[in-house]
Length: 114
Image (cartoon, rainbow, N blue to C red; front, side, top):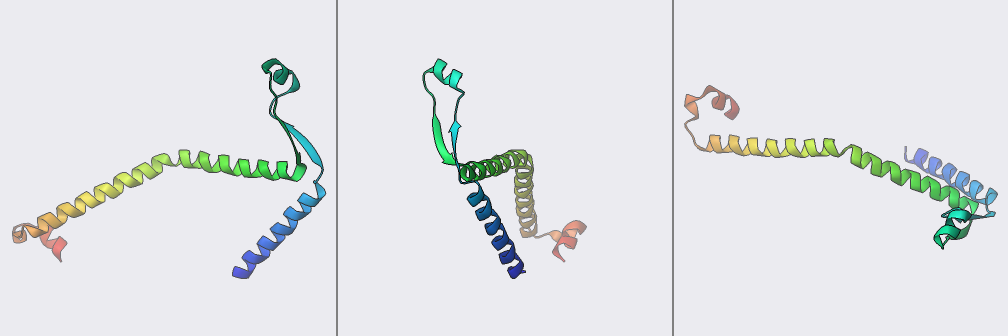
C-alpha cells in the first residue's frame, strides 16, 4: 500500500511539473478593471507565470472548501461535545451512587455492579 501511495505522488508530481512547464508564460492579474481602478484612483496588478495562477486557484478552492465544511459540520461537533459532557456527568452520578453503598435494595444498581 505504501508503494501505491508513492507511485500516486510521483505521477501527481510529474503531472504538476508538466503543467508548470507548459504554462510558464507571464500573465497580468488585476484586482480591478481599468475603469473601476481609474474611478477609485488605485489599481493593483501583478505579473505572474500562468501555472502559479492555476495552482493558486486550486489552493484557494481547497481552502474555501475546508472552511465551508468546517462551518457546515459545526452542529455535529457541538452535539458530540454535548453528548460527551452528558456521558461524563452520568458516569460521575453512577460512581457516586455506587459509593453510597446500600445497593442491595435496588435491583438496577445491583445489575450495574455485576
